[in-house]
Length: 83
View 1 (cartoon, rainbow, N blue to C red):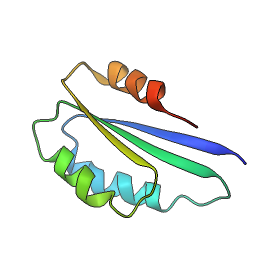
View 2 (tube, helix red, strand yellow):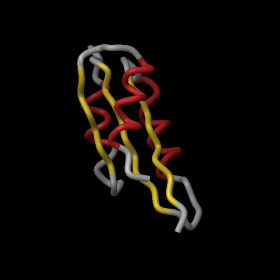
View 3 (cartoon, rainbow, N blue to C red):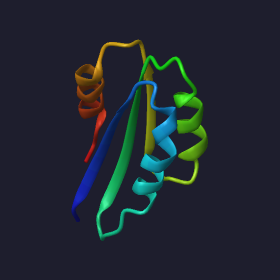
């Protein structure tokens, strides 16, 4: 079976996160999925929103790290992805 890892770096994106997560929830198709969010040192409410809004999703990982930039956050997600 086909599988996909969705890797989403997040830095102070609280305004957009609900829409992003809703889009992920609405993905359709016959494939396994995992959702990896890397909070890259956000100083807004991004982490709380991630934790609250992803409760319904299975295969979710939320990683919190210091701010190292989007590329580093993406690479961290790739390292832990399984699909």
